[in-house]
Length: 307
Image 1 (cartoon, rainbow, N blue to C red):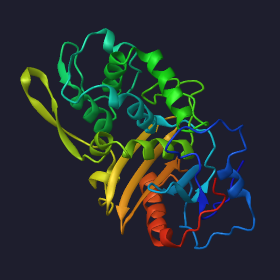
Image 2 (tube, rainbow, N blue to C red):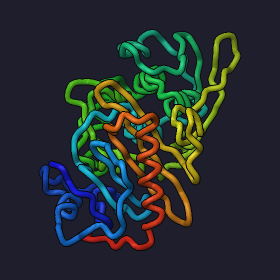
Image 3 (cartoon, rainbow, N blue to C red):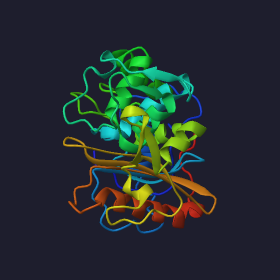
């Protein structure tokens, strides 16, 4: 269902605690979007072509505007936010893992990798930098192996999503690699980003532009974040106040992005899924436009449909 963007609804499923399941189509957020007596207070940015998007206040959980927030789409590597929310608290940053061949089993063809080597020794912090900066599916595989295995981690991620009130997400591959039936939504991905940013380690990893990663022979190599909005690369300037979170791409998902920024006492999250414009850097430009709009209008937003 195509939803018209409406300012200032309450995103009740970005909870501090678990909320009960609501049947599809019965989310308060959707109900608010469909109300014709809640017009947009300020004109939305031109040129928004994404199949789904949201812009929300990370502190209060209010959605300032959205389009198709519950549309189920392939998430690509933005799903790594849910992986991190689920697994990151379990292992100390200094814990060292010697990687076995089994740790890397099942790595998808064409996966983005950071360069984890069989037999190599990596601190958990190294692996998380690989996940967040290089979207390394190899690093995800190692951390999932530490967490009890690929399938067990997918099940636990599914449980985490439900506990957070995210009911549009189906987890099949914890790294976000395209898999039959794997979907999420702009709404749910915003939930995962907000939950992640409440964790200081998540916030640190997702905001890091560059880090050193172990290489052969005891050397290290510099890795750079693939989030162009964070780094300021490929013809983009670093977005003012940017604090992360995660970008992604697969042939099925197209370009996907969760971007958080902090300005003037507000932290906002823009989630953009699969822009259709074909414009270079389109996903970053649309997220930036939504964040700009949000910062201009955040103080005027009036939450509706509180629960």
